[in-house]
Length: 301
Image (cartoon, rainbow, N blue to C red; front, side, top):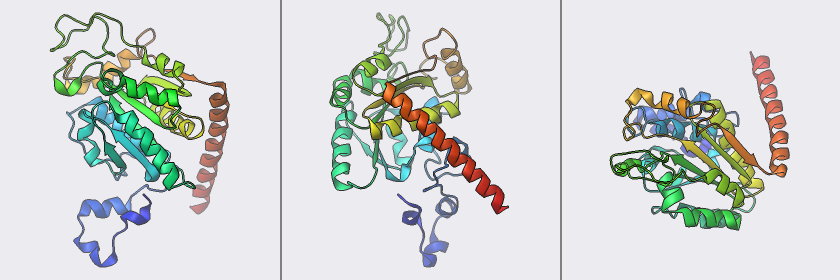
């Protein structure tokens, strides 16, 4: 989607809602320097949502959308869950899949886009919860990695089924008690990041969304690596504050506690040697581009 596609006919301008006018005036479509810092002033990717107040998923969603290298040519594949309530508010092409089959849908979509647009980069990004990724959809998730499908899978790890009452998921902590898991989880949290890397993912990251700069870098890395090498996986801790007994303002503290040294969400990355070299080169290009943009802005004053 380019900025031309959201342009308003001059004759129709006065009839369009002020929100749409504002979107056109301040859209960041086509801006390669877009970042999470634009969230407060540019709203065409996501302005509002229907999630609970203080929900970490809403924070993660904004950071992800602002971090996509090319949202104009990105298709996101979602699954049943809290995230499916947000996709109708998102100004990026998206598909809603059945619960668990999101990676199968994304596999066919990515291949079809390559045939339909052979000379254009079309990114596919899967976004689903822990139930759809590691429980009900684990087979289709892993099979896409085994086949080397060239798209990114992002898991919002709530550590339980957030939108259906708090049932136990494979990513729940051992011993954790929730409303619909009264005896507590009996086995350890599934080590999906390590499994992903062992299953053929070229780049894997596990972190919380408490630090926007880090989230932006990881999402960008994952999408760029998927274009060049193959499947990538990102696991983001987005706790359901209601189901774990927290107040709406305590989501950020919960994530910070989980990423402290020795805790289960200390930020970690896995990547192949080829990817490591690729990302180092990409970092150098990004720094040069930012330097050039800064110099151009200074010259224009």
